[in-house]
Image (cartoon, rainbow, N blue to C red; front, top):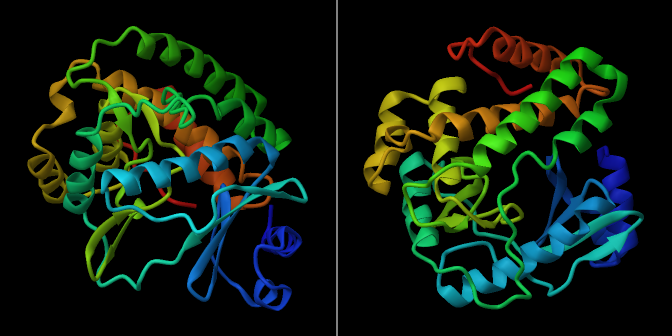
Length: 291
């Protein structure tokens, strides 16, 4: 999905006046294309497979609002399917007053992790199967990635899925964000707010904490910033004997996620090869980069 395709779906969804849809500003393009239009933000999903997730994200937003957790708020109750793309509408947040920091994320995770699993069955929080997208991402990559590398990631996926299922958690399982990174926190005039709720799940709380530990080891997060995260949250997941399993699972998913962009982005192909090579070599010191 490129910007033109996403904008076509945005117009077809008729969630905005046609002229407004044409002039909407593209904020991000990844799993979703995110457009800003006045006091609204519209997300256009990459394909039809993401429709159920889009519906669930809206339900999660309403649940968090009822629970008093600072999070982005939905402006429409249902997702719209337009030209094969799920479309959701959100209230636009005030401009950020500063960049979100790891400690801001930790504050919000403490609130989320204090919530019980919602009793409403219609919310449908699934387990955090972060490896579930591997097959789809590799399929989207096609011939742009080496077949042996794709097979290697599929084998890793199967191994880590089995290992993760056998873990004994340190924290009580329950609701998690699922992609707990500072980029998914917006710091406005009233403080930090959670955004991108589409991976909300009910699973091991450790899933949310491993993300930042991996950021420290693979993506260059300074040690002091990571320490501010663990101090604010109150625990370091690296003290848990299962953290390396969740780390391995997330590394596998991260490699496959990059692969889906390989057909259109040479930098993604280069980064994919770098990541897979470091996994094959067992070298946890190799730095990973955004493409």
